[in-house]
Image (cartoon, rainbow, N blue to C red; front, side):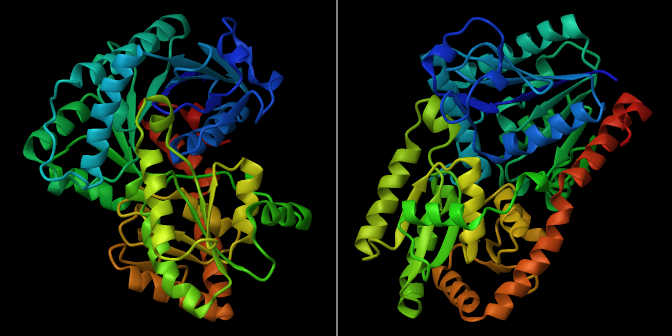
Length: 453
């Protein structure tokens, strides 16, 4: 067995207690209180990595994990269930420059450039590379102490790390956001190929993304592994918990509840659901739409205000469409309350105009809820329309409205979609994910020691 180094932009934990933030000692997270001292970061990457890494430690697949992430308001090092969390920061001006580049890359891969795609190299590019250098320096310093068996680097924010680590140990890169390479500018295609060439393997979330890389001309090893979650963490809430959340959000027992879970960002397209709601309430007046989510990690820590701007826009949409009282902005919910929200909803909707995968759909399936999903989301390749979910074109709000009405009007259909979706969710269970991740690791680490036990 060995030690694994993991890197991701978004940290597992965000700290809210200033006394903890200022601590210079290694903190054991088990001594702190969730909701008072810290909260778990929202977002698919950290939600996937956490159960994977804890399971690997518990099963003895690795001796330990060093997880490096960007976390400006955090102590340098935190221990948690066999995982050491190492936090990187930059001066605020550099963080702002990094954030601008990161945002440009993110918008490009989500098809949001307007009117022209940004150049790959820009004035702030040095700040983007500086952050990657800081990550690489810390990873290499830890490697000299602990002798890592492999480096597992996550998502586009840290793509250059592979070129900065002067080690012979395997480097594996996981791509999480949408990967539509055919519509990238040529300079971006060449840069993407160059950076990926420094990795021993690339893991993508959808089969279609694997095909995209091959069409791009990438000749290295590519593996497809669906993102995954631990179903044992999604327990059924009791009646009292559901009633308390209903009371807090102002939802009556007889109300139909539509649920969307996503950070506040235009690409998540919450406005599409709001516009569709106008037609839905004409058929079902007692329908409420619950929007769960706040700004992203970038919005809160890197000085990007798109979350706040998008929230203002969504509130204006609600006001202009006469839907006051029909749309509930729930903001960030605790893990417990989020499970309650899934359990109490009648329909779950993922409206994103482009989505790398969409684990929230799998979470809704665990509660046997019917899902209505944008055909532009990665998870759409798991959906057979009318069997385990409904698909819609996110540019067509009338189509979305008709599909919501269809589900609310047909209890048998809703039950069937939920039951079949629950079966499909097994493709994204952590046991399946660990099995496939272990197969990738064993290929590069030679390790029967990494076989599932």
